[in-house]
Image (cartoon, rainbow, N blue to C red; front, side, top):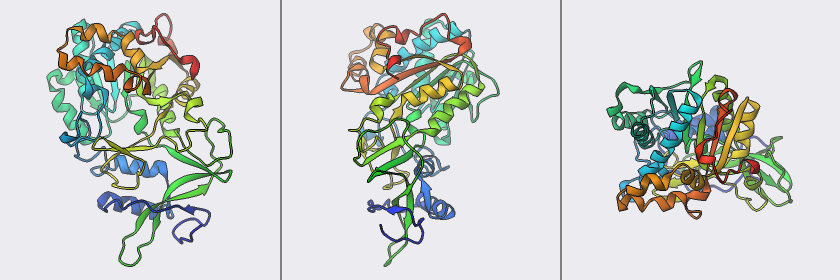
Amino acid sequence: MEDNPRVDSKAEILPVPPSDGGGELRSVIVQACHEAGGWLPFDRFMALALYTPGLGYYANGLVKFGALPLSGSDFVTAPELSPWFGRTLGRQVGQALQATGTDEVWEFGAGSGALAEQVLTQLQADGVPWRRYTIVDLSGVLRQRQQQRLAAWGDRVQWASALPGRLEGVVLGNEVLDAMPVQLLKRSGGVWYERGVAIRPATHGRPEELVWADRPTPLRPPADVPGAHDYLTEIHPQAEAFIRTLADHWRRGAAFFIDYGFPETEYYHPQRHMGTLMCHRLHRSDADPLADVGLKDITAHVNFTGVALAAQEAGLQVMGYTSQGRFLLNAGLLELAAQAPMAERAGLARLVHEHEMGELFKVLALAPMASAEGWLPMGFARGDRTHTL
């Protein structure tokens, strides 16, 4: 253990990562660390790194979404990869609107607006009536891009910064849960620590540096991790709190969350000893969130069991859980895209193949109890895995 007067005496200072290059965001984080007594839990650091107004990764003007690094983008999402992802999801949305007697869609974290455009295009093609499509996005920059892309839909597409007192409609979240801040837990020598961020004081002309620091904690993963080996993982209180908050406001409809992740038994498997935290920049991945803060995405895989349990405890019904590939095939991807140009059909394989997005990404469907009876979402007609949660 290395002595550092800025860090709690019980916190273990870990090796220093490469410099993040400085900048305003780094100064904001350093100041927050000072104000917190020299140590920030990782979820607080992650929130600042991603969402600080004007500076965080999702709040600055950098390009995020795109199929190729030449565009300056950092990663590709399914709607950017193929318009038939959102068109197929639009078929599921149409069925859910009709089955639940609702006429609104709420999308959280709409990115470039591509998914909204695709869903609305399919609803129009299928003749499904809808009254309003509302986007909730923390990023002012992304909101501006969404408004430009969706201008053709006029004021039927709206933006909100908070949930209404009573929400009715179909809820969508594509790669939203993975971007919600997580807490890091580290087992070392049989003792559990919470991993956070501390400050190494300036020395010999070098500025203050952000470093890892571990503190003993009563927190534990929701599932036992067999063995005595060192183990790093994440817990997801913010994602679970989001589901509970949604349940507090939601009265009718259905929700579809698409993200990469696992059920709990896979998430906390003894062999997954380095956790799932990952950063993305220019279509490359690394595991160092303390470097280049604000210039790259920070994500963690979703514990779908935790999300499903939070939903059930809040009075929601789990309507289905399966792989993205199975969901899209069930919902008619191949039939919809059969007449698409060859260039568009070429991207379909990445959406459904097991070694691509088809297996890593999962789809979880939820509904208020009042909307859960008497119908089955088409995306789960075959291959449902709810029993694995």
